[in-house]
Image (cartoon, rainbow, N blue to C red; front, side, top):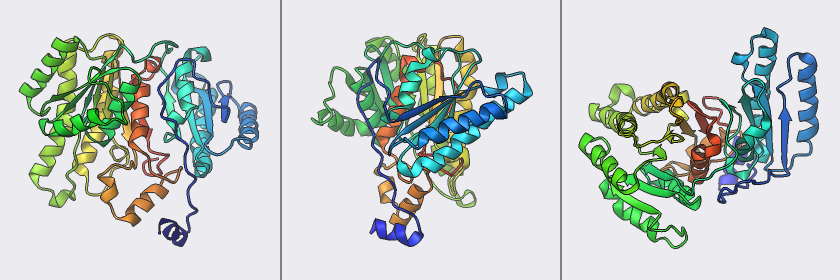
Length: 403
């Protein structure tokens, strides 16, 4: 049925992505089906033509589900006008090439480095963007600020995932636990049974000593305080705080009930900022800590009937960007992840034709999985991602929406 509808719409069937969801290991070998191009020396048309030749020759050898990674220098840090302009051109190439190669499941991303950076200091980001772990991230230009350590893992980290019993939340809990982290599922008390079922699922192999549930309504100050005090008493710190809890209450602005607006703002935004600020004020997030919040592609592009939801998701991006300046001095990073069309239980209830169009409006021509978001969460939580701060990482398959 699906292939027939796609044919009627004039779209070719998408190429299935090969995704690798395996525990992160130091020294991971970059896939052989990857092309890495260093374009940092491009400052005129001669240099740009050289990159064109490298990419054109290289992509011909890239197989299905390949990876293309381009390095550039952050244009805003270059004083020479022409040099800056030509470095910015690499971003346009990467974004367009991502759309051209997406039908084959191949991703293309750009990493912007500081001037005079040594590529040896960015092993972890390069490994991530040339592996199956970044399979639903394409057409992205990611700024790397400073150097990144090449060693470390999550085995000694204490991670808190709000909304951790939900679809994306539970996938993130599993991913962090697979890395050896101690994970606290922080969700409303009504989700305790669902969290327990996750722990009791033999296919997940989650250890009760490593994963636990703490119930709290994060919109209530007293509940937040009790949650943080309980975490402090049991674990002493929060190395990774993932603000993932959120809801939707959709209605056009002119018809939106006031309580729809209030509920979404309270849960998706006010509680996120309050929990983060409370944890920081209590000194629970140490040097090297990570704060990661779930935004949405709709927070970048907007969405019909979601003024409340998109307001919160845009604000989360803004909060992360602004707060990063303050936290950098403390050795703490804060970033946002913007999921695109992800196959969650809620999304599966949407009409088939709507889902098909949503899939086709991506460079990769398909939906993502909760595991794709979890992979991005685990990457930003990794010590080697210290150079990424105050940014929004779109995990959207190269969505044309908001591109």
